[in-house]
Length: 172
Image 1 (cartoon, helix red, strand yellow):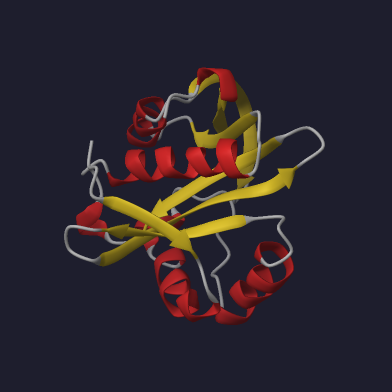
Image 2: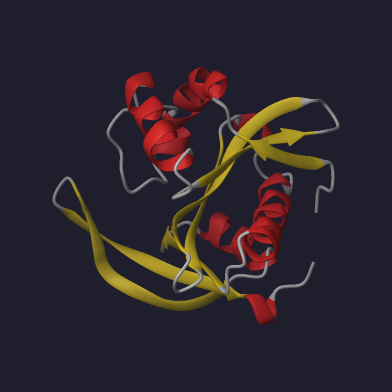
């Protein structure tokens, strides 16, 4: 696993990069929500979700090159039930398959469990996205089940795999 990875909270200044990555076809194809992201929509997300504490979002940096390569986030932070949903995207095509995502997941989980006091972090992933599923397993997530035709895109149903990690299963 690539240990040369760091994460830092996003800022408003990261908007152009996030928008560029989020609109890259190789990223969009793995997202449930495929509407093109505008700077205005991202700034709305940043002000109304990130700055309010409903979402913790970070930029991922490959510390070997100093290049920012993607973003990882914890959304719908539920402090009462101590759970949140995990998401990630590596925006730079050349940086995929190098373990950066698995390491970024570990750092995000450390934040979720240590800083936010979460007990459960879960995610949803397309059932045919074996690369992502393996990356999530490497980070400690366990498959909880498959929801058949859970998401409809252009009238076609897609199965989603639900995965989670509990605080007691997490290893620093």
